[in-house]
Length: 96
Image (cartoon, rainbow, N blue to C red):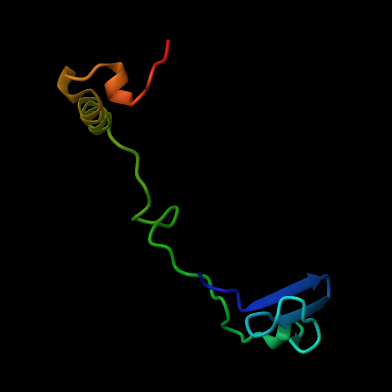
């Protein structure tokens, strides 16, 4: 488990930055680092995501034929070509 390093409390123009990784949970004086400006300029820069809306690699709609093929494959996997009944296919346990 990764422990959070800083706690930033923002209230309008005022802010307080605490170093919470190196101090006990209730410490509020020794771990004060200043305000928002005490963080380095590149701290927590947003990561680049592989799929970005509107890009050439964005998720594209499927053709009706491709969608039909995927549904048929899923159906065959669930029902095992007609070899499974409802209870077996969906793992349901029916109690009367």
